[in-house]
Length: 537
Image (spheres, rainbow, N blue to C red):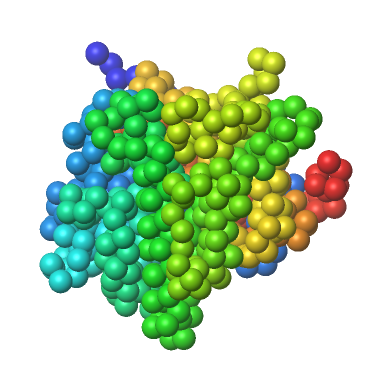
């Protein structure tokens, strides 16, 4: 049967030459091969919005994570992670029953991908260090995997060689399985010392070149999906919340978050005391957030939207800025919410140099008068979250049932951060997914106009946040490559680069990659005096 994914150059009189070039070059080079022109390329012109629209020094990059990208999970001494075990023991919780065992083989092909970043014009690349790749058993005393250390050194050096800033995340959801197996991972306070030592090791090994550190990516995603809903590792929840054999959705999300926050504080304290003076870097934490719109213009709905932010964003932000949990959480969760000691409060307060914000979508918030008889993190906030109002979605639907395009939310959440916390911010993730459809011709799969629209609109509102006085330092798209998307497996694609998972993981820059290249190469904006979206709202 003829394969349905074909080259965009079929039918070209230069096909023989192109085939020869393909043999000579182990990658698709943006500078070597021109992308076909599609109707409507002028809908989102880089002449009106581009790099120079933003302040000098503003950083544009892409984000990734180890388990979603690297593959090579059983290679060169890497230890098992919690996700390695989760996808094997609970395969039904991954939509297509796939794993990150191979992923995009970034471990082997990172140089090819770094060249692609350079050709697009990215300033930075955010990657995560797989804890179990450098410390297979989670502890320094149980052995360092030098091959893992060498890999990250090579990646960092390759990025710098190509003029790209390395940004490192210490923990992006993948925990050494040995620590999960020994004491329950984030459910035990023992994790704090182990994470501190791991962070210390990474700062010492890589901090001479890495100046932007994120301790933990999306602690709220880890705790909600892993301990309340049970759909991500370690797959724990109450029986009334999901298909779990063990767990407690009323207590474990709060315990896990408490320990994650203490892990962050311990790592930040180590950096400031041992490395800040000599390395001069920054340490932050990244929060996944939605913007919450009151479903109806009532006081109850407005308060519900505020509580939703408390239980999502402020659950992390208030402790790392002010050393305490939000008042609404202490009132509604009660004794199930752990308490910080005075010493812990002092370590947490002001423990960030910046906040990382991952923004994708917005939801409607509606008040629920009383909590469920079955307590859980989901019901404790007494907020009903919906994506529709009177049958109309809050924004344009996408391939993910949780992601509706609501670009003004990026402005709202950043202004909220300015008003509530007044700290520097990096937009560490923003992106949209396509359905993975193997029946598409390659040129159709590459023609991702929706992704261009998504980023263009969000960048417009991001620029408005600058005009509104937000101290926003950079914007990272999610993601450079199509990848393993956790519980969704490979059923959706977030990359600006198409990965052919059926043909040796070949890389093909999508139309959005070329759009970003144009955006980043433009040196002047033709219409810098556009009216402020924020002031007109």
